[in-house]
Length: 55
Image (cartoon, rainbow, N blue to C red):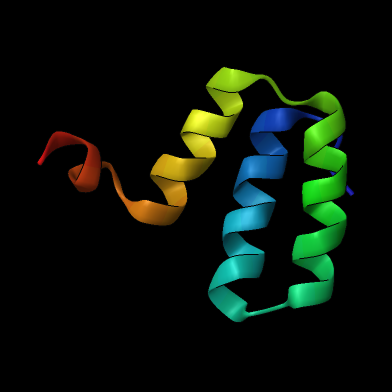
């Protein structure tokens, strides 16, 4: 499991794309321990797309 918040963002995005609920849960638990607000924003952008933020 990745320790770096940036790597966790990428791993969570991959798990969401393939629909791996168990892995998503494990990664999010770790994400909560090591990530900051900037990483949460990056995760949102990866999952929702930057276009939603810009209109």
